[in-house]
Image 1 (cartoon, rainbow, N blue to C red):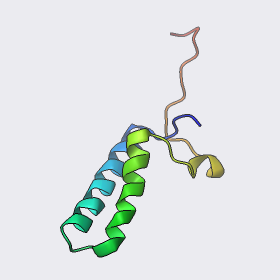
Image 2 (image 1 turned 180 degrees about the horizontal axis):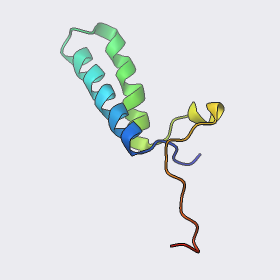
Image 3 (image 1 turned 45 degrees about the vertical axis):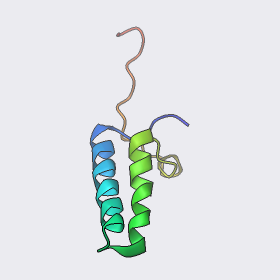
Image 4 (image 1 turned 60 degrees about the horizontal axis):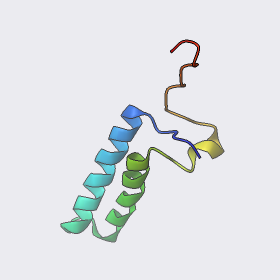
Length: 68
């Protein structure tokens, strides 16, 4: 499975994931904050396992070798 999470998508996932995990660690969110690990991991690895099922990719299409 290749990368399918683009730059802006990656930043949003890391930000939201970090915020949820921090709220879990410091208490106000409770155990729901553990769900923050999902966007955090998908943002760090740039791979979302649900995107291929939906036919989505937020990565830019790679340039053909002839244009590089």
